[in-house]
Length: 466
Image (cartoon, rainbow, N blue to C red; front, side, top):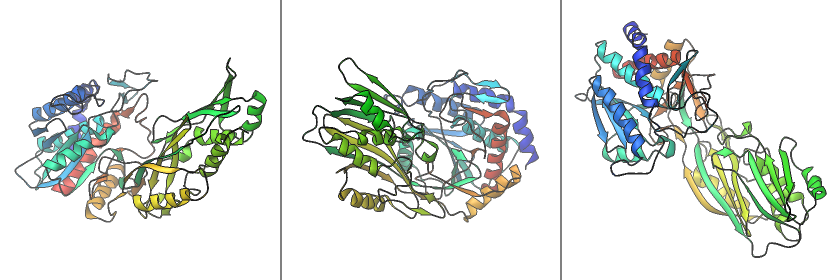
């Protein structure tokens, strides 16, 4: 560890807190585009604040039409390293005990939306660069700090930037976890559908729906039944998984409204959830209807089996040593007026491609079953950077030196800001075993970890560019 850098960062802890506070105060959730502000006024304001801070510390900055801002350590030298952060945030949601847009320091923890993802890490990078400059370190290559505004909604900011500028040969982002994330599985967001010409009768499933977003295990699913008694519902309920809670109400018009309650989880880690949709399918398929609705849901239940997260029944099961197993989640469902749609999330290993997974699924769907067709398919290929590359090994050695823990590479099902950047990796800012409540209520980072991140980033910059 460079003792001068460590002391500088510790001595400027109060200033780091105040600068972070100025960013947290800006609710930079993606907004409606305005003239010169592609992601809305608040994102543009957050970017302007970040560039203003960097200019105050003597760095050259460039605002790329409010898509991206860049901060150069020394633009007279050849580009050697890019560090990539984002200032856009997810909505605050509910359940906060601290104000989401007022930075709160309590019990050694800094609370606020964006503290961990990704405004806190951005301030840590800025102060790492400042420490290097003010402590008199000379680098042989330029470090470019790239600050984006659309990571949470698809990274169109980087698409725009890369059309104008060439990325540095090495890029890391503190938009993930330590030690180093070098492998991100591929992802598919897709939709299947079927239309019926004749649905209805004395006893039928009128409607069914569930899920709110495609990248999460749904914790709620609903259905409306016509012509059934509570006793028939209770009988069918016995087919449901025991860990799915069912509630129902008999309405004045005789309809019965069902609510299935499960447990939400991120689609990249579906084993941690309880899928309310696939749980409800078991009940719906066990009913006896006067039309084809129940047999249809029974076949759906066979295809999308409760508790199965590896795509076995769909014929898409796959895994490899580096990236682990494929995951599949039926995350949204709609059945109304004789039309069914189901939306799903797949995370697939590097031994597969989007096209190969689709071909396998289409083969399964073409056989006898619920008669589904793929209506939409948006695939992103896996991202992989060799763990033995010089760049990755340098980052791992910095991690080991600064934390006194073994460095190793991580494979994840989610995506980071470098997913589309060849040779890029995620390096920080969350430490092993920590839960910063990212995207949740009371998101936080400890002050100790904020300072440690800044020291690690400074050391990594030195290791790559000195």
